[in-house]
Image: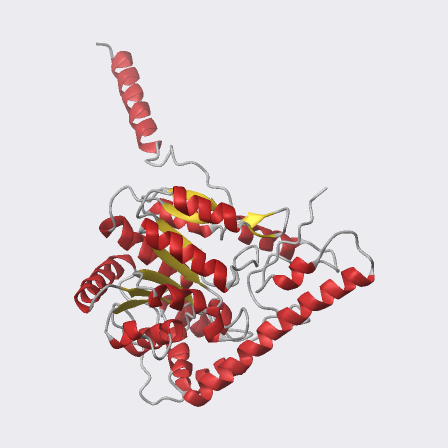
Length: 405
């Protein structure tokens, strides 16, 4: 072999090696589309039109379109920061025990038989999303294999992704009736009857997202009748307790009804809306120390929620609780402390709790008032069509019945 041949062979070898090293292990990863809701918010912020209005934001806003920090949250924050025993140690894996206990009491009622009989398990989560995820992950491992999770059509955009990501198949049940602009109760009940026995049924406890249409008490009873006959498992998503009607007990009526009838249930609770704890707390002009603290420490992280389970007996509750802890350990290790500490202070202080209820009535009352004003204005303008559904719906979402052109 001539020197020229050897040089060509070496060059070819180096070229091939270089090509192999430049290949990525992730060449086949598809580009995911942006999240619809957050992409809409980003588009809104980039729009320079002075009279723009964001009707898609999933957070409470004032008349001026600004965030509102609940006065009771400010008080709890002051108490927290004046606590000489405050530290930034890890929380227990399942979170603050008094927080999870208070969350169960808030959802099930102070006189709950399930709580008295110690049939309740719970784990602090990263808001409602974390609660639904932890519950879905548990079901993927310990619920009968092949069970399908049924979600309403339409539903919160994240429901399907959460269950799909843990390997649980997702199907729809009818919910919205465009003709009546209300609940399709016949379609709903029909789908529950047709679903395989023992299906997982994801239910919105109150203030249905995104329609604003909730079943009546009589309709909830009919839903429970079918689910009991079919041995379905109820998984409630409760993101708006107290925020819907202003009454904490009224907004959890559906959950308590199912528990009173002997169902085993999961409930994913969120404190994002009803406490205004959506993200991280920073001052208006944060210092580098505050930014570092907020990113690398957990004491400024606000998002908190709770997964609560009601089981058949105490022994089962202990087993479920132990698996919540095991799964949580491998998922997030320990939940963040800051938001849960704020909520824990309020839920366990009678005076602050009463103030929180007042704040909830302020927010829910304003939303109800805005619905009423919109309805009256449409009637005043003699707008064609029926508009009662706007005031019949509840919470911060509404399906208006309008169609895009």
